[in-house]
Image (cartoon, rainbow over all chains, first blue to last red; front, side, top):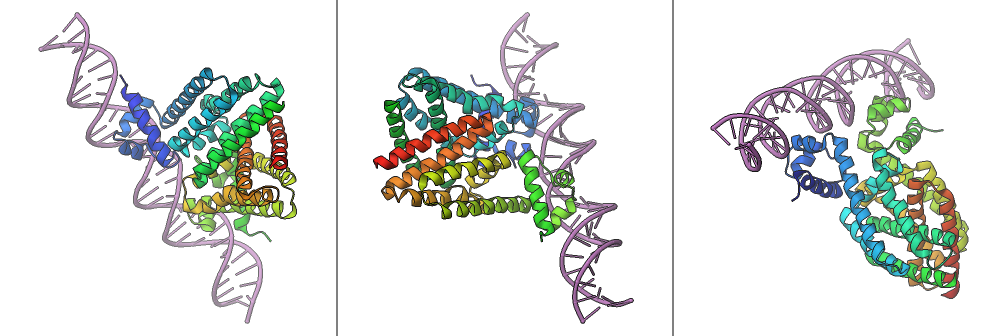
Length: 185
Length: 185
DNA sequence: GACCACATGTATCATGTGATACATGCCAGC
DNA sequence: GCTGGCATGTATCACATGATACATGTGGTC
C-alpha cells in the first residue's frame, strides 16, 4: 500500500518537525529514522530534493485540509472555529517546522510556491468566499486576511510561549468580534 | 565610536536578512561582507556565537523599540497603530530573517530566550497594560494577545504574498473592531 | 625605541558532508 | 530456474566547512 518512499517521507517529516532542518545531515537523519543515507539518495535524489518532498507533503496535506474544511461548511463563523481547531492541531504536530518551511516561501524559492499558496493565497480565497455571503466583497477580503492572520499569529505566539488556553480565548473573542462585524456590515 | 565587532555584526545581520542563515558558511559570509573567516572567529568565537550575536542584536533592537513605543503613548489604539507601522518596517527590513530567528525561539534554544521575550512576552505585557485602562484585566489580556497575533500574522502573510495594502487595510479594520470592543466593554 | 594589546592576513588541519560506484538481496513473470 | 527491475548494504571520493596555529601589522604608552 504505502511505498517505501512515502514511508520514509513520513518519518523524515516527523524528524524534521522535532529536530529542525537546518542542522540535520543526511547521515544523522537516516540513522534517526532507521534507514541509510544511501536510501535517502535513492528515493529522493539529493538533499534538497528531500526538503522539496517534505514541502510538497506538507503543502499537500494542507491543501487537502483546506478542501475538506471549506467545502462542507458554509457558515463563516463555524468555518473559522473549525479552521482554528485544525490549525492549532497542525501547529502542535509540526511545531516550528511549519515556520521553518514558511521561511522558504518568504524567500520565494520556486519549490515552495505551492506552500505559499496553501499557507496564504488559498485560505485567503476560501475565507473571502465565505465572508462574501454576509458582506461586501471588499470587506470580505479584508476580514479574510484578518482572520487568517489571527490564526497564524496565534500559532506563532503559541509555539513560543506555549499558552494554549490564552490562544483559544483570543480566538473566541475574535469570533465574537467577527460576528458583530458581519451583523453590522 | 563603533567597534569593529559592532560594525561586522551589522553587516552580518544585513547579509543574513537577505540570504538567510541556513546555507551561509562562514567563508561565504565573510567574503560577502568584506572580511575574512578569521575575523569572524576572532570577534565572535564560533559560528554559533555569530548567530547568538545576531539574535542578541535583533532582540536588543526590538526591546528598545518596545520601550520607545509604549512609554510615550498611553492610548491603546494609537499605540496599536504606531506598533503596526514599526512592526511592518522591521518586517520589510529583516524579512524572512525575523521568522528564521523565531524558529530558534520556538525550539526554546537557551540563547533565544530573550528573543522569545521581546517577540511575545514583553509586547503582550505592554498591550495588556494599555488595554487594562479601558477594560477588565482578563479582557485586556485576551485583546492584547489578539492584537499581537494580528500584527505577527499580517507580517507573515505580507512576507509571503507581498500585499502591503491589504495588510494595512486589515489593520485599519482591526483597529475599528478593537475600538468598538473597548467602548462596549 | 621597547613594549604591548588589539586587529588582521596566511596557511593548514581534521572532520563531516553530499554524492556515487559497485555489489547484493529479493521477488515477480515467463 | 533464469532474468530483470526494484530495493538495500558497503565502501569510498572529492570537497566544503569550522576551527586553529602562526606570523604580521598598527597604534598607543612609558
